[in-house]
Length: 104
Image (cartoon, rainbow, N blue to C red; front, side):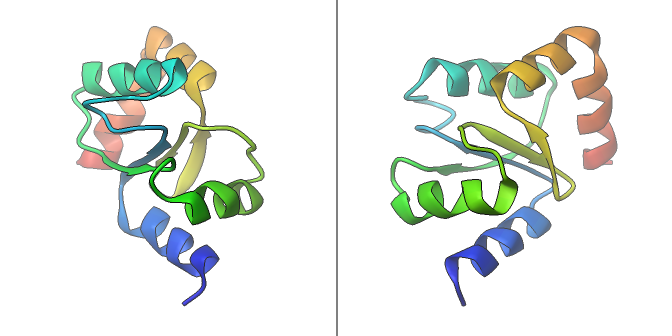
């Protein structure tokens, strides 16, 4: 299975998935930390992949998603966006609604 197929499978199998730098407990960039905080504040149960520990993912994912930076948040198989979009959605309450529907 190619890395691209593996990534598509991961995205499909996880309701809420974040590709980030570091881990939720030890984010290794401010954008990842901000995004994780928004997900936690929305009571989200999510999976994550540390792109710093998985170089092949860090290289392949932007080609699949057409999104060049990390973090990348996927909900129900769809790329929602990175730190700025997630933060904005969190502030408006839109993120919580999307997360609640993904977890129900």
